[in-house]
Length: 240
Image (cartoon, rainbow, N blue to C red):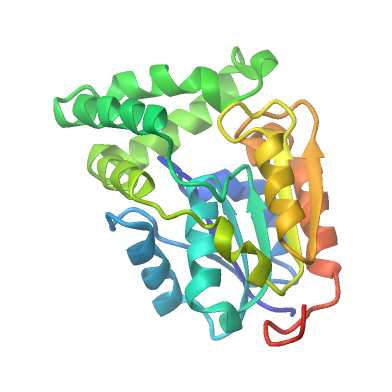
């Protein structure tokens, strides 16, 4: 067995976000799904992950999970053997995005959690997958399992996240930056920004996928992660 792999889900998501990747990788990498449902800050999520993770591990996060992964790299780089940032960004929340999040929090607080999926769905997947009932069912089931209280905590955490761009150049482990070619929430230009700043990063753009690339194009994402996990490990203490 190779190093353990910790997977960090995004907003309103569970480990089902990585079902096909976990099934393909678990033969060689013990898989752990981070709990991102109980904390109101990205820092607290990262601390919980570190408290429950093995002493050394590979780390992959999608969307909000990427924010958590970047915080782990900032505070405990020596614990991480390699990093994958999927459909995410190193930037802080914008004023416009924060306003949208606050409106969704208000819905959840007033018993309108079911409406949140309808508001988010068009932004989560590529246009040609928006009529995919099976895919939408998976996304709805994750939201139902996460629930309104966790959703509120997660949105507050995302609003309060820091700007991780100043720390990207210090990441000294093999890194995968992957993004759906049709991701509207964290578009490819943000992935290119991170790739340019991280010394050992490789960029993969998954054509035909939106923000939920692991579900929309699972085979392509799995292949990219397998290649990433096969790259020679580099200690976080090694020179950049």
